[in-house]
Image 1 (tube, rainbow, N blue to C red):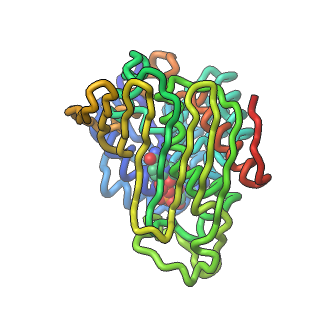
Image 2 (cartoon, rainbow, N blue to C red; image 1 turned 30 degrees about the vertical axis):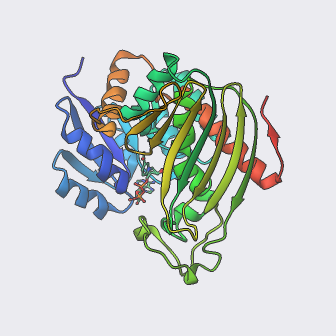
Image 3 (tube, rainbow, N blue to C red; image 1 turned 120 degrees about the vertical axis):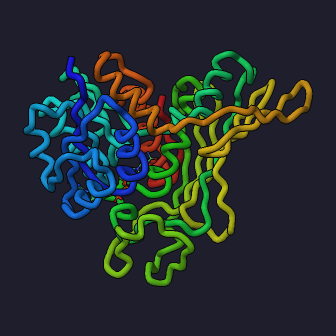
Length: 355
Ligand SMILES: NC(=O)c1ccc[n+]([C@@H]2O[C@H](COP(=O)([O-])OP(=O)(O)OC[C@H]3O[C@@H](n4cnc5c(N)ncnc54)[C@H](O)[C@@H]3O)[C@@H](O)[C@H]2O)c1
């Protein structure tokens, strides 16, 4: 076995900087042989900040042709995930691809098939599955502590936060959608995970693109992908607000999401309603339990380690062991199927049956 796993990072934007390069820097058993970005100066800036990077390139095929590279991280905009992942798998590399898998379910299935046919690992960056709060809620449900969870409600709403208006985030052909595929994927995926998987029965959904119909007139407090915005000439044809209902063979799920709304609140939480107890998970933070027997609110005390480090370590270990883990694409496809169904229901303005 090699002493160190050799990694190529494709895409040197925010998630590379925030999550993955800091993880690699903390690991002893990895080399980051390549950092690739079509904008070479972004890769070079990344190398300045993370000296673990050995070489900067602008054509990812250079890394794919290098037999020393074991693992490729696909950290590009959504529409690039499919092509780079398929090319990497066909070059015999294991792949970690950021969420969402890609822009639709059909292409997601092709990616899973390719990885499985070639016996290569393909994991998806639904990082919250490695958040300690999520792990604890999943354990509680498995142990029956909620009784029966009959309904889950979630909110992923912010005041004025459309990212990169006019660029890849708000152009449907490049992103696959708006707030649902960008934020909603995290919430709905971790609900399905905590429920222990659930068979989808039917969905209904409404999607809105209201807040920046006139992009130049849009006022905002936060545009966290401002460097990719093209407010002057770009496109905005995705959901900035979404509302839906999902029936499963376990709990039903209702949700409201908004990148932007004329309500000055950011509400990011998930409520699990069980007949014995309930829980509110503050997204990215801790949870509270509401005990139906004692009528007490319990705030468990625990440490939250770095979820990105945990997901990266688990992925690299699974490459060595050959054992698929919770973020393997096979375990995320149901979430991709759900997103597609919700968008189809919104387009058709009708309920959609899934089984
Ligand atoms: N897991 C999470 O919590 C999380 C958070 C943020 C973003 N993401 C996901 O990560 C991905 C990237 O998001 P981001 O915010 O870092 O975007 P970003 O725009 O900041 O970075 C993407 C980078 O990819 C580069 N790129 C585009 N095409 C390329 C190609 N063919 N070859 C090499 N480089 C290429 C761009 O130049 C850019 O620097 C998205 O799919 C997003 O959904 C996940």
